[in-house]
Length: 186
Image 1 (cartoon, rainbow, N blue to C red):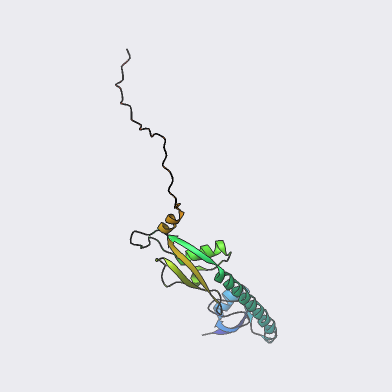
Image 2: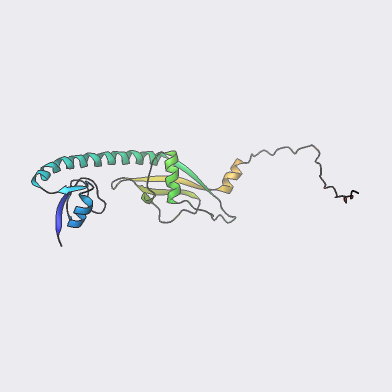
């Protein structure tokens, strides 16, 4: 099979990162990578420029690592409470999913995270405290701790403990008036 060597100028999923020398099929290089500026051919001049690309890649990776560590600290400090409707037996009707966690993080922490980075084996359906891992970077994993409460528990907390005095006004009972037969006009 005809292969050609290229130097990547940016990350290409499934192929490599910037400044990597990769071998790909000629058609893929000619029709996709080269026209989009994602790579260029290996030449002696290009190999000399590869050091600049490696430096750019190292700066980008260091910046991404610092951002991920900062976000992991903010996520670690955050405490959330999710409320679920539950039946009489305590079984939840709904569940807390990865998308719910991502939406809450976006609203309260201000972090845009892909829902696939939240590590959940299954949706959370039981009440109590839960800990979920969030994979932010290949070196950084944040631990999010949150509470899941029953909606019935929160309703009980909202009700005041002191009973209110009953209303002493008279209650009126409304009765419907019976329909009277219509008299015909002449």
